[in-house]
Length: 184
Image 1 (cartoon, rainbow, N blue to C red):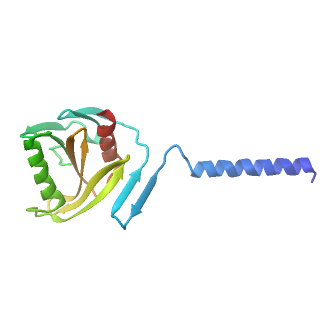
Image 2: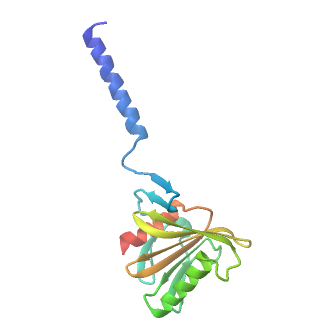
Image 3: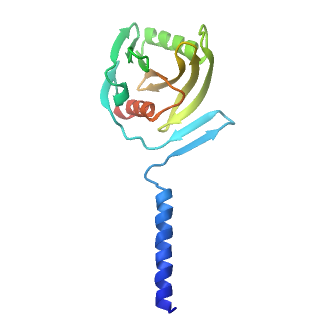
């Protein structure tokens, strides 16, 4: 085998190796999930592409993924709640930056995150990071509804609660959270 043929083979092997490396290490989407048990802080960091229908809840805009569109907004003292009331699949509450809003928010934190007067089973809380934002994440189980999850966070001085059926933070929920931060 002459030196030219050997050189061509080495170049081809290097090109193939680089192609394989970049195929399995795509840096355009950083899907880095890091669990740190020492401080009970889970980090979920990656780029989220906003999808869905623009929805305004109590003055804050987000993107509602298709599976959660066609909900309705109900207003109460201190809050507005977007919900899929026909199937209980999601509720998004945006609290007023007022005494009434703060009172309702504190009641919801006490009830859902700390289980005060809540008959559902053992709320489990942890702080997580989604799209570089700190969020309180709550796991909950109801004998009537099954598994449901909640996140509490703040955007532009307004507190937000998202409650959905399921047993994990899914991409559609991350899309809604990211939408609140990106569009307000």
